[in-house]
Amino acid sequence: MLKVAVLSGWHVHADGYAKEFASLADVKLTAMWDEDPERGNKFADKYGMEFVPGLDALLTRGDVDAVSVTTPTDMHPEVLIASANAGKHIFTEKVLALTNQEAKKIKEAVVKSGKEFCISFPHRTFPHNLYAKKIVEEGKLGKITLLRVRNAHGGVSSGWLPPHFLDKKSCGGGAMMDLGAHPMYLIYWLMGRPVEMSSAFNNVYDASVEDNAVSIMKFENGAIAVSETSFVSDASPFSLELYGTEGVLLIGHDGIWLKTKDHDGYVEKDVLPKPLSSPITQFVGGILRGEKIHFGIDDAMGLTEMMDAAYRSYDESRHVKL
Image (cartoon, rainbow, N blue to C red; front, side):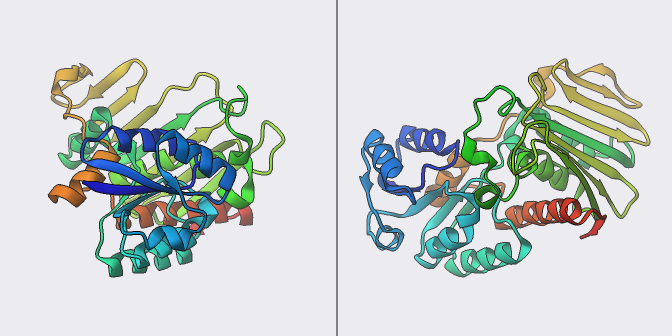
């Protein structure tokens, strides 16, 4: 039985993660810490956990094998390093940290601990994205020239996104830092590390962070990638477009369309790879059964490096070299 503690109910996914952990037969939620005690007590009561007011006190408990970290992003270095130093397995919401320097310190602690680590990259478990990865690896499109990924919603324009998700200090950014993380880690996974980043961020509504954002990346082989995101797009289905010298792959609300020398038309669902298990299921399986965790500390580091460059590009109004 894996005993898991929840560290903060701040993130919008905190409740969903706790619910998934609680649904697993080989997991028990045991304790809760929150930087907001009132919220933490309510969260703990909901899942039958004990609320512990001090982080250090929680991390020394014998009934905590692993932690689910859903704190404000600017608290990640403090909380993740403390958890690693206490010898706990770590599951965390993206992004890992707000700067490369912070991410490196977290990685050092995680590697030193020897414990399992998983960051939540759910889009890498989906069949359509696994299919895109397969197509790239098999060279079906020839040399990739452009990748475009869009992930957006109307959380601000429709008024349902919590106000604290627009707080620059705790979040480190707005739409790109949060929702834009998904296109960013998909681009890194499909294309590798870019060599240059340029960002255009804007505000449709008055906020201290961007609610509408695009980042453009250049790669050493001449390819370009575009990461698009928004909190002000009422109807914006996920889309992924891959263009190459010998073909095109389009993934969107109409389905999956592929044009290569061997195929020209829509792709049937039965040829897609099977979905991977959820990040939480991978995390638990990795700890209890030695199963593969597909997104670990190095994947988390890659995402932070891209976000760090994206925000420096915007803040300094220049192209940033990675």
